[in-house]
Image (cartoon, rainbow, N blue to C red):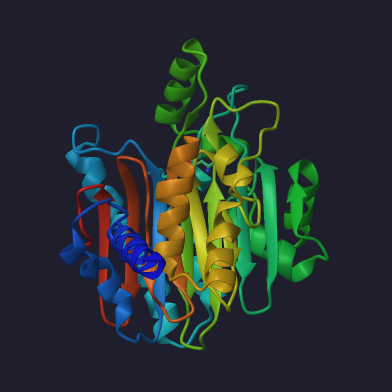
Length: 347
Ligand code: ASP
């Protein structure tokens, strides 16, 4: 009797586990559509790259046709750049930095050029980078004059004995390594300034964007990077999850590479990027089950909004999010696609 009951329980459990979201992170029944995103990865691939330009309130009503088209164009440009490097046997790390640099230079995204404004109406940028082959990482927080913070993050890993540098010290370090600096006015995008002034009136802190990239290269190595302006109207030198290794970024050749976007405080508290990797490494979960569990179960229960892009050691990609939209894209040697809205498959 006991064993029959156990059997029924196990069947019920496996049914509920299989009812996972699609690679786009939608919950529910779209099993047939699951192949669309994981198709990229379920066959054996030589390399795989995924990018995001932030999870948030992207809906067809809130995004103009022009923004929709221009975001897709930049996502494709970032994918082109990364895939070219990977086709030429380049490293996961080089592809991550090159893709993120393109997104940082575009005002559509809350990173680099398009970074949002703080309460003091300045721009404070955070970024991090991790190499899953050597399990080393670098990050910068609260920098105000580094054109491409992702480059500074990687330099912290490669050229310093540290992992995380912040503020003036991080800027001094980057300058000493020949990383391009700009006048802080470079980051002034009028729409972002208007937004912080509006948000200040409502006494809110709003999130907006972030960019990231994860790669599995043809050598089998993984890398991840994330770059952000943080949250509109943040103050007191608030630092989010993006430069925190294990929260916003993680890569481990034994499991996966992860880049996150969303309400950073939750991603720090739940060590989101590392949690996904740990579920894979210690519990043997697939990248899909691990990331779906953390984003669509744990974080949803906690009230933490956002998403992740993940690639595992075999090149399987999964990009779950629990918000109305997430700018995202992927490419492998076999397939590629970009998407914005929740009810949309990669195309
Ligand atoms: N995670 C970023 C932060 O909290 C913001 C975002 O991704 O929207 O700083």
